[in-house]
Image 1 (cartoon, helix red, strand yellow):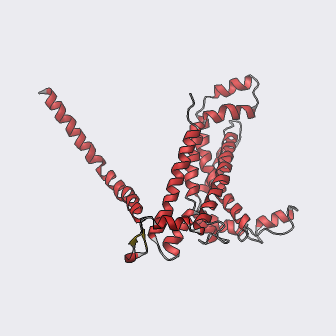
Image 2 (spheres, rainbow, N blue to C red):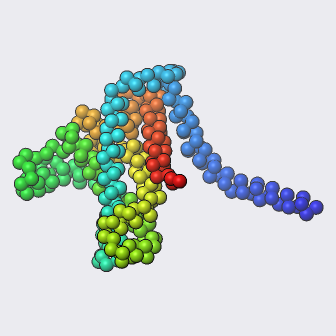
Image 3 (cartoon, rainbow, N blue to C red):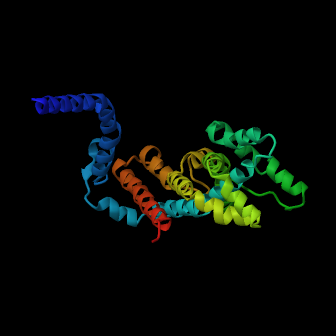
Length: 298
């Protein structure tokens, strides 16, 4: 009898538990699982609106022969290879400097460095386009210091347009990663660092061989999130180039190309869905490689 009551009570709690999580599961299914499955099905179709037809692997063939896609892919990879390491290293160095207990006004510095990632995208894009214009403050400062004779066309030169995008992303998101590193540094056992200092290990040695290994899990997390963010890069490029990815598609990214395929060019939702799954594959592959690189070796 006791077992029957116990079994009934267990079923009662199970049913009530599922009732509590049912609304959340329904929302996840409606806004996450269904769009994923629908986009996967959509990637096998071509055309627009009611004129869509089943294309099978036709979108993959088009993808392979699409020079604009390959340009967007190469640009995205360039941004990833250059910008993510710069941002991670800068965030680590800044967090380590701001973790110094003897530093005055550290709270002010932390707030100032973190503010860009919560600033208005429109406001900071206008500011950047003004600062890096041909007659902007950046060119005028460089010329006044004698660092260059002619102003740089930041927004119209292919090379410098890429540099400007990298500067913008780094300026906006370095502070975000810094917060994670700063929180992790404040939770480390200071006695380890003190023991190494007493043994005569220089500050750079303690940072490289003690601090960084102890932050491995946090570095992995920020590297993966930065990888995902860079492969999905859209906001900065759209705002700085007004959605064109110019000059001559030199700053076009995969996400901006998907947007253009869906809303700016002749809409082709099936092909846009196919391009979007390239980002999915890249994120999965690079995340796996990063997990593999930092795995525990026996």
